Image (cartoon, rainbow, N blue to C red; front, side, top):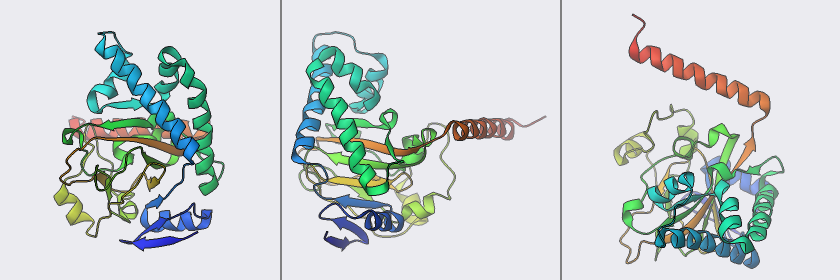
Length: 278
């Protein structure tokens, strides 16, 4: 195992030991692992992603309806929620269904080798993403606000897998390393608010940012509280295909009940504080 310290972020050239990965994530909230996916896993993932988009594009081209839940993410930012991929390929590309089922297990296992068997892939908050232009670029945010993974797990890590080379020819992600240690203690955004302004970020958490270059097969993993955004640069072609696969430590039934009760209490408190009691 070899690693390079770059902008205070550990970049691993090979799969790190669990201890090294934990240190990197604890200190920086983000780490890149080159070549985490095998050539076969990468090829299978590319085939399923391409097939999923082809199925949707084909139905749209022929004026045929698509599932409303699927259509929402697709219209908003060309996203495909992973919990809908199984039904999608089963209906329109059944030859891909076994590949997708196998991929879920392989990817989950690759992460379990880093942090242990208690972590699970969470399709409900995982997506395929197809950026076509700069209009779909995303501002500074944390997944705890924008992806709502907290309802599914005690903690969450995003395994971001580019399917096109990023950093030079196409936009990567820009991170603020170490920001997770601050953002954990900052109240969550409410309502439809999901993003933080450049001024807020620079004033609240000053520091150097890091924009990793990555190729298909590489993985960039980051904590749900790590600030990040789409890389801002002049690209001749801003299109990019990627997967954002979130892994969580699942909530037990008791923890789900406690979390739900706390959420209801927060809503009641917020309603009374805004509307008043008199």
